[in-house]
Image 1: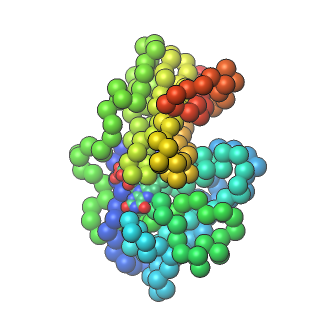
Image 2 (image 1 turned 90 degrees about the vertical axis):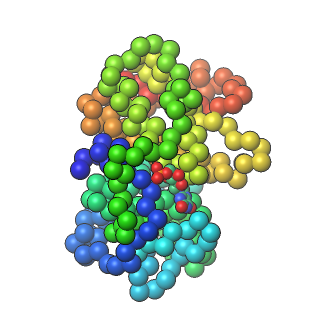
Length: 254
Ligand SMILES: Cc1cc2nc3c(=O)[nH]c(=O)nc-3n(C[C@H](O)[C@H](O)[C@H](O)COP(=O)(O)O)c2cc1C
């Protein structure tokens, strides 16, 4: 399965066989994790693999999923570290899905015991293992907002860009919030995050992780579709006061 297939077919899996994976498979996953490109250079991160088979560790809070393994990402707290962490862990997520494994993000933090073993500030984790149910949706649509609520087309675009946006919109997000909004021109996509209500400020942390996850879908899908993209922060948009949205980045095409 290639990355685009993983993007289009992957769904959160919440029921697992509580059994070990072969050591070779685990070691391939860790090798892959060590080679994942960053969104922002100069932010140190650590992926930590936690086995939940012999010793029950970590995630017991409401909404936690009981899985044989968790991969946790911790990061130095530098500017945009949450975007970077989301971007990196989503690449790992797609890799695991492409290997036929089930995965589910864990937004709640683990217990203090596990957290204290991490090198940097804990960000988010990915539960994974062999699914006990069929992991891939066979034909059923992912529950996502309709395109018209998320994308404003200012100019006509090619079918590749349409496909790119379709892959981007399928990204998983905490509580399926889908905070991303896009303003699309022929050769650029301005990316915004919807502002949270005052009451939901506590969720801002996860929102930026979600935005990083979405950017991974966008960049990996662009690679598969042979669309050249670079990210650029445009000062004139950054400095505009926006009521409902926060500017994140601009995707320059070609
Ligand atoms: C950052 C993040 C945190 C999440 N936290 C949880 C969680 O704690 N428990 C859970 O069951 N699902 C969690 N999810 C999974 C989302 O609920 C799920 O991705 C979303 O509802 C879309 O469903 P799908 O992945 O099946 O397409 C999380 C997803 C993300 C991206």
